Length: 359
Length: 200
Image 1: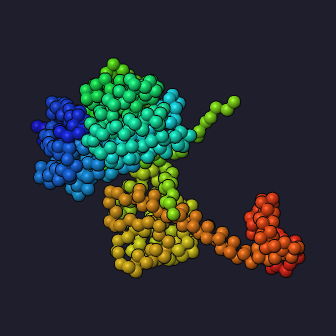
Image 2: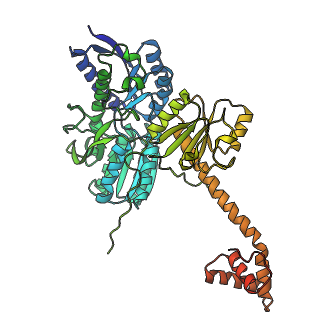
Image 3: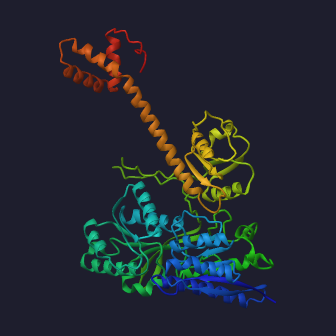
């Protein structure tokens, strides 16, 4: 007889980042189906879904509803960092745990959150390490107007200037805005070596389409010359990007068809993979431990090993730098098993010294 | 004055000491600091000499007193963060006198340590830079009398005050020393009775 354990899913199925939500939801539901069908597992998950519809103010109350009214103690969900920060006080208040399966900007290690996707030492820093020697050190930074865009660009600026590079421009758009004209005009003049795109949803789709048009007009803006880089675009948003995705270079722990994802498996995108892993790891931690579903995260993790670092609650992931070619990501560079280092205090204590060619 | 850019300190392996009796607040704070990447030790009822080698001190603002720190009252050589439970004005006044650079309210929960570290480091650096600048300005103020005497000595050779002043500036540049130091040399060389001629 399997124990029935309620598992919250807090994902927006409409709104500007619903494609990512759907990818996470598929991953979580696939893992739930796997656990529920596994006769060797003494538990099954009962999903409890709440849909904030992309409304930031709905996350806190809906998360509270899951934790207070349904008895669930674990919630998989949140896409934006803004929504994650909104629900942390709630999971803390109810002694719950949020399993967060999306790349984010780091500088957080909540006692009530597990981070199963990449943080900057697993996406942004390797991406900059790849782009500066291959394309140059003059960057243009864009982002959505909230913590993800701000903090990614702050860190990028710090690393680029430390490497002797230059930031030629930095521009933000409100979430959902398609007003990319000014960025394109600035790019015409700034003529950078690469663009870091930390926009989300429709802003990003619009920007990529406008940048492709710019490249057709002026070869200085074609992907081979001046690529667009991203730490958050995956296969789940390629349908919305279409041709505009060609040449995009992204960093991610997994791309479709690439092996090496911890625990193996084949997924549509890294969002799906990270949500799948979150549910599978939760099941592993609960299996054979009656009542453990009500324990705080620290107690649940203590002495159990597994993918979650008990100090930081981040995971060890591969790093892939991949380029979109003919509608699919093709890996250009790969690093195995990089531990998440949210405060950048463990893996890279000092910026790499600037080396110049002397003649 | 334009705010200077914050320097994000390298916290990997930095040493933090929590001066607090054993308490869940110490556990919660230790968890946060360990997650950030610091090495944490707890001390009570006083800081030993090893505190001088630490990078950050978190201290209990409720129960601590002057005698617990191995340095002159209010002159901590490292950033200090007050752990405040009781917001009584007397205790806040005492933690300011003790030299706190930032604070964290008790009970300490899931967050707050990282911003306290950055704010304390920034306030400590700013305070240190300002103290150095003030000491330098004070010294130069004290040397003003010497400058006046040097200019008078140079002007005694038939120069106007303005010419003597310009000459002194040129000498300082040629000798690659400060204006005040050049004045001190002139006064000393001309045998003027200057009880500070051994300085500098």
